[in-house]
Length: 492
Image 1 (cartoon, rainbow, N blue to C red):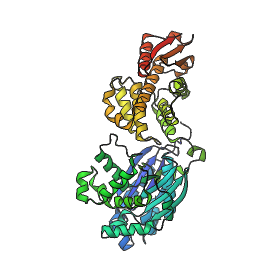
Image 2 (image 1 turned 90 degrees about the vertical axis):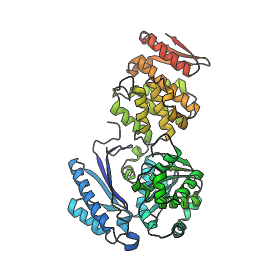
Image 3 (image 1 turned 45 degrees about the vertical axis):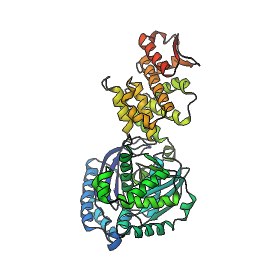
Image 4 (image 1 turned 120 degrees about the vertical axis):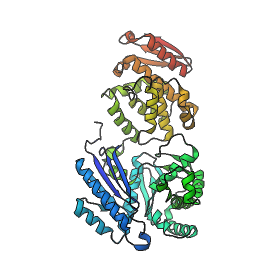
């Protein structure tokens, strides 16, 4: 298995103010993939602001769901269980009694975490995803809003405010809600020092806003993680959503009815936060507290690994015909002369693309290109934005001889510029040539090399590989050279 990967599954139970959730991950590693994921909307904190107690109907639903989770964990023979409860449980008069009942009935140890700890773990979840080293994180839930400043992947400031959806719903008018939000924001003096930074959004209601924005903007890729909106446009969007009725939102934003209910108050909270921060960009994170709990358990050297490379290495290990990753490294080295002038970001994507270069081998050859493209667009990778996904997908489309570029241009043209598009295609065609030359025995590439000049692309074959040459190799080289605007030459 890849370095840092555990064979033991890990179960995380998260008891929030709106929902209780069970997520099972494939282990404690740098890029944990979800094996199972389910949630129940219980609204435990629905009446907390007025009664000080958990919602009785929610208690019954939550208890039933947690009983199911305990049964699933036992059936799956999972030894590592991490269970936490957040705002509703820590604020409710009967929260501790609920936790005791769960332990007595199901044997589950549930830890009620304070707001500062919730904020820290949410920040860990964002950092696990490689979303950037500097900015402000906002985690919006049913009971609270956590605001965290990260700088160089370190938590510098954090605050927990009682501004979750249930709290704001309990306030009668929009004007009173605004006053409440602003009053609590005034207690967070560090915010004024972090204007014009990126803002990373976590939490169900804010993620619903991401889906709504994708729908309204006709964004070509419906992947929430790393979905990015320019700061000023994000503030305008939040203000617009905050002014709409639930009935209007149901008709216009393309989001399920149950997700629309809290969107208005969540948007209002976001807009008022943005009035203070004026963020450069709004970036939605698909990871948060649950992933942060896993990240917290990793050794520092594992935390320091590149999130994207860890992700694609796991995928490559699972789907490739070959278990020797030295071959993928050899492919990357062989291709280096084609990309000497590329920036660090592109070279990282080229590295990741090499690890995915055998992803479509088991498909029917007529469908390899399209299926590789579509799979990579939506795979649960960490540490990659939407443009990066399009780059990797287009690379493998070309690697599998996807000649019909028009078939995918409706997506790639909106996410990549002309230079990125050209680089991805050249990389894919080079990978294709490498596989055709060696039949996947990529170690043979050490006996050949590229030479790139102003007008020619030369493939040099030494005496150990010149016998591998064929008309097929010549045609593949010509296609690669044509993509680079050069003449193809083979020299033995």
